[in-house]
Amino acid sequence: MTSVYGGSGDPKRGMELLWGTREQPKRGPKPKLTVPRIAAVAVELADAEGIGSLSMRKVAARLGVTAMSLYSYVPAKGELIDVMIDTVLGELPSGEHDGDWRSRLASVARQNWELHLRHPWLMQLASSRPVLGPNLIARYDYELRAVDGVGLSDVEMDLVVGLVANYVHGAVRGAVEVAEGEQRTGKSDEDWWREHEPLLAKVFDDDRYPVAARVGVAAGTEYGAAIDPVRAFEFGLGRVLDGVAVLVERDRGQAADAGSL
Amino acid sequence: MTSVYGGSGDPKRGMELLWGTREQPKRGPKPKLTVPRIAAVAVELADAEGIGSLSMRKVAARLGVTAMSLYSYVPAKGELIDVMIDTVLGELPSGEHDGDWRSRLASVARQNWELHLRHPWLMQLASSRPVLGPNLIARYDYELRAVDGVGLSDVEMDLVVGLVANYVHGAVRGAVEVAEGEQRTGKSDEDWWREHEPLLAKVFDDDRYPVAARVGVAAGTEYGAAIDPVRAFEFGLGRVLDGVAVLVERDRGQAADAGSL
DNA sequence: CCAAAACTTTTTACGCTGTATAGAGTGAGG
DNA sequence: CCTCACTCTATACAGCGTAAAAAGTTTTGG
Image (tube, each protein chain N blue to C red):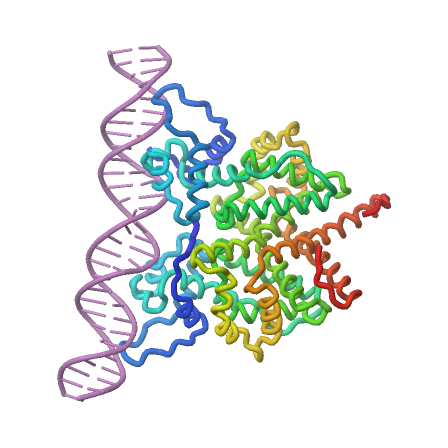
């Protein structure tokens, strides 16, 4: 008899998984595995070979078990990935903050940046539903506290934190591309750039696309490569924080508090 | 679920595909298909069912041909996806601009936003290498022209355009999630939010996560849902443009300065 | 004009995927 | 003890990308 909500459906079961609120069974053989152990192995595999080549069979093999055995811990692969996501979110700080709001927010951004570099497969789960696991909530609280008490409204706080998260997510894309490209081809981005220079010269047609040609060449020679993801990230982060600062100062003036910054 | 395409071998063949610089064969039967036609059908399928369920067999079937037949037009699925990407980039404007730099850059962002909503599968190709097709170059030129002549250095222009692209990419994620969630479950995000309110109340534990609880509830009631992607996008775009404005004014006051943050 | 060469298309096949289903093994409660 | 609840294994299926081989189609050279 098959459940109507097979596969990625049942949110209650997913919540039990993420929050570990499942009463352990009283009868039957002792389980050989645990959900956190399965998730840890899956994360290891995804880090090493990419989420695209992560399969239930490989995870099971690494655990000395058959593929189907995993299905008594996890309803389907989708839920396993949900647990993987919340697992790696647990690597992020969620305690007390230091410094002013700007340095706090910069730290938040850099922590998220590094997490995505450690686990590039996070990028590719862009269009799945959010997970709402315990580590996500803890982290959300932490990120909000970075801008708590600086004069923003609650909704503005949520929007600012979302803005930083969104920006980091977009920016890390370039870095992951470069890193995976280098891993795949064994060539550095710089080598690739030099090797394909003649082809790029034809692509950046000076007559049809004068601005692209001028700027593309200027940027390419400056970076020594097609893109410099770290520089792009730090540059964009600076602009984003400048934009938030404008908002903070505006709100502060509105609250008749002539503080400095 | 996720599509990772790797291994794509010959970059020269890929370039020929994208730029259409392949001399057509003199002997043999007339080809029934063309690469643009194949790509158009593939885009249609990906729009309708997602990139995860796009297969060579389905594309071929839609064209009245067997799967293997496609391999005389395209070396592999990865290259087909490259062509798909450049194809949809062709939907974007690339002509003359109106208005000042701020409204131009806002238009650029909104155009990219809408493109991603039309073709959500673009999101999931986050970690593939860039495509360098003709439409990408034309669009890059167009976006650069939005901020040409406002006093930024060439490298700064590249960084600003990259910042906006990165931000949009990150922001569109939430919108795609909501849209796909609604399509998959048949329920609006608002319904989902209301239905799971008791569970969310337990998740937002007021003692452990006071800030998350306060802000999460405030944001949720304000949006009438877990997130309001359009509002988040417009808010973040405003802040990003404010941050760019700070840079523009700084450069304007000071002839040349590449420093940031 | 005909055969060879060049090209497209189909057929078949292989190893891989997620997971449905059924059965075997294991431990506690009646 | 048996029985129930549970874990784990074995088997199977449909679908995937694509390699290899063969068949069909058109142009070219002799």
